Length: 431
Figure 1 (tube, rainbow, N blue to C red):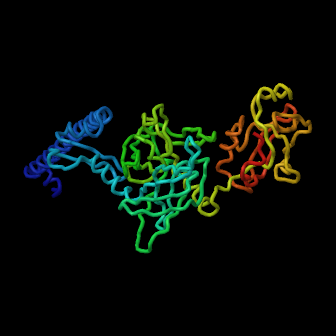
Figure 2: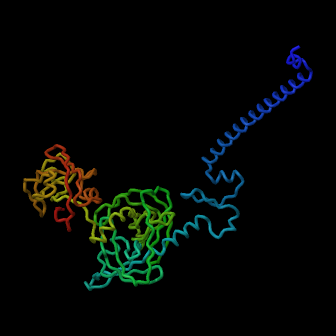
Figure 3: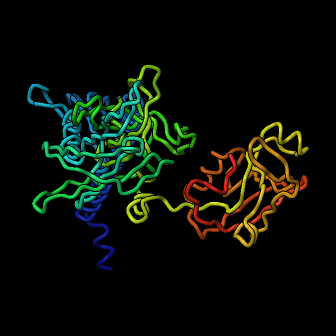
């Protein structure tokens, strides 16, 4: 008989086979149970994630941690993640927000100076008397350059700088940009004196609602710190000399007389703006202050140090701002813009195609020429008055070519015109 057939009929073999089948069935059953349980756990985890995500959306990180039974006193959000302060607040001397404010002040305080100006004025009896003013300034270099507002130092006969340690020095005006209300001063220091320049940030990443800090000398109170938020961005603000500073930062941080020229800082202690003006009916802070973006200052500081002014581009033409009387008299098809009265013979504007007028007329105390182009757009910005042209060319330089849109005999023409250096005193403009 075949040995294999004999083994298949042997009782022990049947027992072994039954055991193996049983073990296999048990293993499969256990596998099914484990797989089913893992599916349930996965489903539970997914539901938990959904619940936690909902709590996070509604309550934020604070609500999520409190749901987990964690007592949270403060949370600080930074580039490295989220810092959480736990436990009883009696264990801490300061909250996270307070520590952040203290750190900002300690980082920037030594970079802020108190500026005292002396100018010459006349009293009611026409007697010459010294007039004292105050403001703030920002140390921007170790070799003594200080940034402030133009209106703080304009017309000053003497400038004095008071440092954080009480040391006083005389300063000189290096350069001034009235249109952006910025000026650079210089102090000559003994070799052993070391300055602490401000840490410069950028205003390009600011968000409305972000915390900002102002440090300055309001009403002569040295190194006063006020805290607020960014209330608005990109604000055009018309200054007292009728120019418009674009891109201004609006803040509700208290800015008062004496804060002018001081820094506006972010939560890292970086300067993002230069406090310059307040909107007030009483002369004090009413929750609307403005600061020049630090990026604007960075763009003009090199020119102020090198040339004493900003080398801006301009059109070498004589312009007249349109008013209803000129529009009606010349029968113009536009109500606003700058009339090109004359172009400089052989100049850049003439080479670029701009046309002046030929009809000589008396306009007030000046002689103007009608019949020329009417400028309605420059460098991509609409132009209806002088302030618009200043704004359009504020970031340009001599030698650059800009697009100028004009109305000529009722038709729109687009010209490419090379800019010249803006003349001192604006002798090419008829106001």
